[in-house]
Length: 190
Image (cartoon, rainbow, N blue to C red; front, side, top):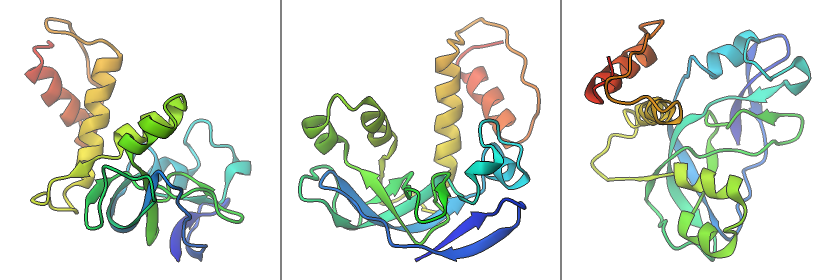
């Protein structure tokens, strides 16, 4: 399959990699859409993402992806063929490390019920499965990539324990800054 990579020289290129392999608790999805995240993809392209040294390149890009389930593992309980899901990923393949890999033709999602039943102590896997949400049929898959941003902003507000009547300053008023401002306002944060 094809995937979008960024090389060490920060140039983008389409590369051929193997189609992802999924296990009994996962499903294979055909990627439908993927947004370009300024917080990850753009910084990875420019080499400014913290924690990603040059030796991590070349990288497969794209974490704001949406895909449609086309095959399921034998233990999958909560996913079915045709489901639209958030956050499919692609593991490292050949010389390419993964920065989610959502700009690929195919990806993998984990099924939360199957993971909780068969790997409940694998906290990383449980967390990933919780984020790979099935979307209602009426959600437009192209617009759905924004749900990733909305969820990340709300998660940050909760993680930093911002509460009603707290005072917060938001620096930067791009799409993410505007999302923070709106959510903070709805939560009664000053």
